[in-house]
Each structure stands twice: as C-alpha cells, then as structure tokens.
Image 1 (cartoon, rainbow, N blue to C red):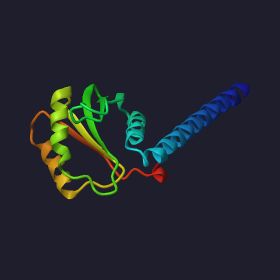
Image 2 (image 1 turned 60 degrees about the horizontal axis):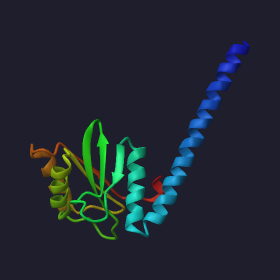
Image 3 (image 1 turned 60 degrees about the vertical axis):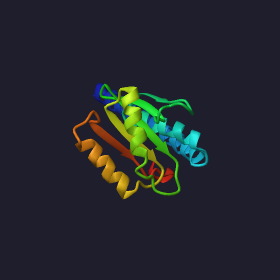
Length: 152
C-alpha cells in the first residue's frame, strides 16, 4: 500500500515539475515576443527560441549583413532549414522566395521557411506551394505566421 502511495506521489511531483517548466518557458517566450515586436533583431531572437521549442535543433541567427538571405539556419530531422524572419505590419510579399532559394542553395538546405508576426500574401502562399511541389532541391516549406503573445 505504501509503495502505491509513493509511486502516485512521485508521478504527481513529476507532472507538476513538467507543468511549471512549460509555464516558465512560455512566459520567457512571451517576454521575448513583446520586446521582439518593437525591434527586428530581437524578433529574430524570439524566432530562434520559438523554433527551438517546436522541434528544430542547432538553431542559430545569422549575421546581420552578408547572410545571403538567411536570417536563421536550423536543423530538423537531420535536414538543414533556412528561414526568412519578417517583422511586419503588412503582409509578407513573394519577393522573399528569391532570397529563400538563394539562401537554401548557399547553406545546403533542402527546407525553407518564413517566420512572421503577421500574414503572408496570397501570391507568396502560391509561390511557396509551387516551390514545394516543383520537385527541385527544396523538399519542404515551413510557414510560421500570426505570432501573438496570447498564443503562447
């Protein structure tokens, strides 16, 4: 009987620890986002942490200039992924695709992504669909949009 109680207590403590840990991470992300919505470089830092929390590995922000169109380079399932990070008050347009393809080629990526606090235009959405389905070296496109503090 005592063993059952100890096991249940242990499980309860582990669950509480996981809950508190997740809550702390979400609070940290919310704080990063609030400062990131005012500064594009801080928004890139937020994007880096957000991607880490969502399964990307070895996530790094590139240099501010001469980055060849990549703002973030990461790994997912062993594949290199390059992201364009856009802090915008309007929709992100399709001109991003040229930079993404160039960055993917230069960094040896087979996946690309757009990360934004807002919307992406319909023309960009169509371009990204074409890019993914074209059968070229880009195998997958990631889109993270409409990021708000309430969502975290």
